[in-house]
Image 1 (spheres, rainbow, N blue to C red):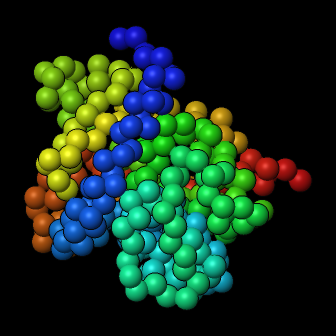
Image 2: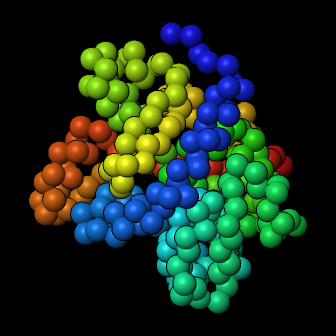
Length: 257
């Protein structure tokens, strides 16, 4: 297959981010369910990697309603900001937390971030919505303190390839390496379609490198044995579609003496 023109692709993905404005409330409802994979697997793993956030400033890009930042501020994070295009934020915000209606694809256009530096910058399943991932990561890197890092999670790309292979009666390899955009109906709201670009693990590594970042830690969290017994349907899904990959990224500048 031929790879579509990158300019056309960026335009397609920019439009694709707009449904999130309507989808965000449905996502938050789904995330709050007892059997939500975010609740069972993703957030516990993300929180473990973040460790002690006492006295640390956090910038959450694509923060949803800001609920995870609320937890981090209660755990000791300070001077923290959440940015989301939906503007659908929690009403009860602790001191030290600011939630901003903004687009993570253009961080330079958010005045509240000007002249700011953060200890931790989060892209928790939000990175797929930027049409220019290298630019977005470079802008995020410029907002890091000298010893700070980016915590970024993405869906395991094999999941999307397997789903498309099942739907299109193609092979896993064909879909994994296709490099095309695809649309799907989210389980959060079947009436709203999302469009994303297929990617491989090597695509992610090359994006990180081009943005001047290196991987300090990577993790692929799975259900605990107890959670698997309590939610066998989620265990079956994870065994088939694998879940997410978590990356702890630091600036290459930090390696220089």
